[in-house]
Amino acid sequence: MPTTTTSTPSSPDLIATLAGIVGTAQVLTGPADVAPFVTDWRGRYCGAAQCVVRPGSAAEVAAVVRACAAAGAAIVPQGGNTSLCGAATPDAAGQAVVLSLGRLNRVRAVDTGNNTITVEAGCTLAAVQEAARAADRLFPLALASEGTCQIGGNLSTNAGGVQVLRYGNTRELTLGLEVVLPDGEVWDGLRGLRKDNTGYDLKHLFIGAEGTLGVITAAVLKLFPLPKRQITCWLHVASPAAAVDLLNAAKSAFDAQLTAFELVSETALQLVLKNIPGAVRPGVASPWYVLAEFSDAEAAAVERWLAARLESGAVSDGVVAASEAQAGKLWALREHISEAQKIEGISIKHDVAVPVSRIADFLAAADAALAKAYPGIRVVAFGHVGDGNLHYNLSKPDAQDNAAFLAGQPQVNRIVHDLVHACNGSISAEHGLGQLKRDEILRYKSAVEMAMMRSVKQALDPRGLMNPGKVL
Image (cartoon, rainbow, N blue to C red):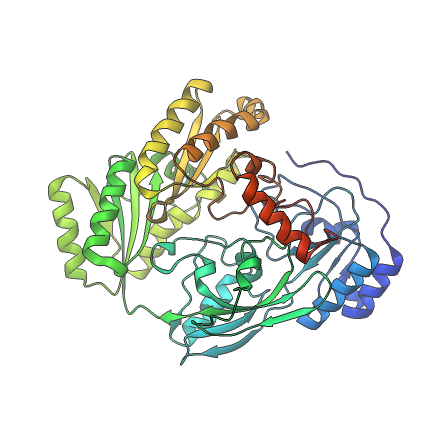
């Protein structure tokens, strides 16, 4: 449930200073105006802030950061506020300033010769995709929240999504950054170079740092040729192990033309069919499904490959999208799983990564351990099997039982995360740590790793004003 908070008096001097920088209309102080910025998307975390400030340029961001630093006020950078781990939600003290970057929404440049696009942090992911498409290019980062999430947040969490298999995480898609540092200085690293071996690659400090080291205000991102055709398949498989075997067979046959390979359980699909209007089951029920996408592959080659998989029994049934609209409907089944779960109520979510070869082992062990500890548990498993990232979410079907189950989250997390660790995996694949896993990570990262992270934090933000209480 959301944490109950009380507000505390704001600083009139700081608010007046901020209003002088960005304009009075861009400093929000009223409780109703501030409320959407201090509650996370899941409704799990609710904090307080003395104000929300909405700068319109990198220069204004720098001036805001300098003013907050002078006042000793903590800063919580925020993009589209779609975090699933409380990374963009302030604490309950009410002294932080939420720095909302939505007005930094300009596409600064598209360089088709260099296959790059330079965008500001407040651009939604969908807007960047559209700008790339208008130039006959592809920006391949693709998330269910792409209409709302912003590039700054994608960078700050090193977002993954459905095409990591072919194109990599946000980190691999980024060539340069512009960052406002905790003292208000601006680092201009907006270089569209694929080779630059002149010392530490500083941009990687800020990608995945969740706003704890500075505020990303712009980025140079990679573009790719726009696929001329895409083939989308919804395939029925018997088990996660069968899905992994199918993945490796597809990679061997199609290599980089295999651009997405998603795993969906029947339980996850049932929630979508129940809660999302217009959702339709493709074919008969199966224990597991694979949603695969092939880009610029010959249709005849994909059909021959699928026919062979059906003949061998590796796939029991399937649907190949006959149009872009039908492909969109298949993808909607996958992309609405989180929304369908939210409608059902709060669940214990896990965003984990294990080696692809260990996916089946992890799922079997976790399912068995949780069923023994919590009879009647509902496991909603789905995710990016192509890169080993699983969303493993747990609840009780009955709302009354679920409240007691949720109270035991630490014990549930321990079961899941210990099994992930035993597989040499990670307890956060693409959502980040935020405040949800800040303490949990101490069990799984070595003392050496944590000390190095704290050293970087101390060097860049010695006063601890940048997004306090997150990551570290």
